[in-house]
Length: 203
Image 1 (cartoon, one colour):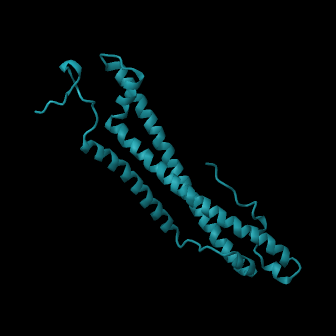
Image 2 (image 1 turned 30 degrees about the horizontal axis):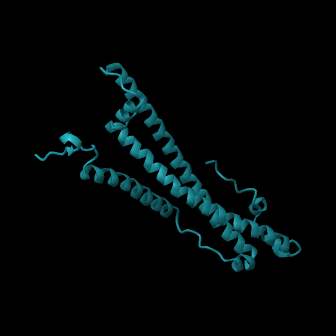
Image 3 (image 1 turned 180 degrees about the vertical axis):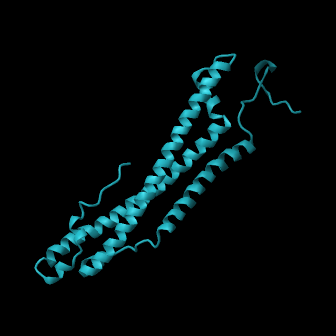
């Protein structure tokens, strides 16, 4: 067995700094990479479950739509926006319950340790002890997965909201242009609340 101690002045040897092995390093890195991959895969599956994403529209297209075309474009984007909102709400609920489970488990581990430990741990030692418990690590990973998924879905929500608002603003402009023409009567009644009808969910 090789001597891992390092010679210093006077021939005294000190133990080398304690770190993690290469295998331990790989395990840690792969664990969090897997959490990211899960979030990206789940996000893609959620979007796919909604249906076809409304295509982007140019400014020229928005300026030349007929009232019926505006109604169709708006309805599709409103549907996409609402479905994204529902899925984002579900992610927030899952994240919140996982965070509560993590907090509750950490409290129980600390309580048990204080009752059974022979030697009292420092706050930092107790924190490390809690963080290395298998059940705690499992829930901590679950929390991280939902946090990553929420970041991705937040971006999709912002995109859906901006797309809906863009159409909403143009609808208001076109309504004024159509106000003196018969075509204005064809605008669906639910468009008259835009853009006030678009509400942002609390983060």
